Image 1 (cartoon, one colour):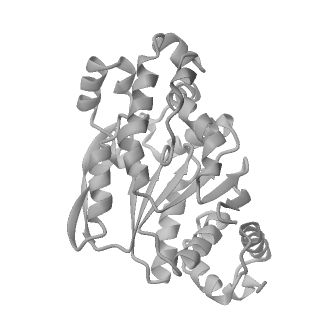
Image 2 (cartoon, rainbow, N blue to C red):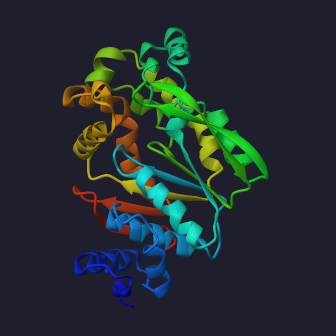
Length: 303
């Protein structure tokens, strides 16, 4: 395996590069070193290496739509940006979509809450995204012409305008916490798994509605994906800790404390736990994350 040292990195980063490449079962090459040198040096080294490896692999056979999935705080947005840059180095034009940008407005969610269940006022679970608009965007981005994409402000908990991009793109990457999640057996929904479900969804109406959305419109969106990357978090405690760390990026007046974050994560818990068990069997690449966000293992489904 070639040494990446020619890119001017320090010994620690060189070891990290070779370690991640070895976990992926890939040879490190001068071309990969050149790509790595173009990526944001302030981003995690492991994610830079992973992005370079994926861009190199996809350059041989570019997938039209890629899903990037993982629990809250796993680093999906960071990895998505790095993949976009790494692919540009390989002359692959990428548009990154965040599923979060397709959340419904509070007004829409309040309507859902009044019609179906009060818990649907809180963004997050399947059923709170405009998944039809997301699918439409994924399809149109592969075609010539300008398209307007939504932007969602999590601090305000509201859509906050749009951005315009011009296709065609070679690859569309959809990143989101529940991308690729499968529906659960109806019988498994009867018993609550946390305080939120036990106290505020006593008749399981909310979780059955969420499950139905996964089985129907969301499953149709996942079927559009040609490749799925899954960042598997160590456990739910890591999700709570990483999600709390994300609050630092928000204005102080919009930040939530640890208790509020613990409650918020309960909305995601059932599907997150299910994905941790089932998605490694279906994802094209499963990336195991350690407590410090480093990559501890990787498994390609084709391997």
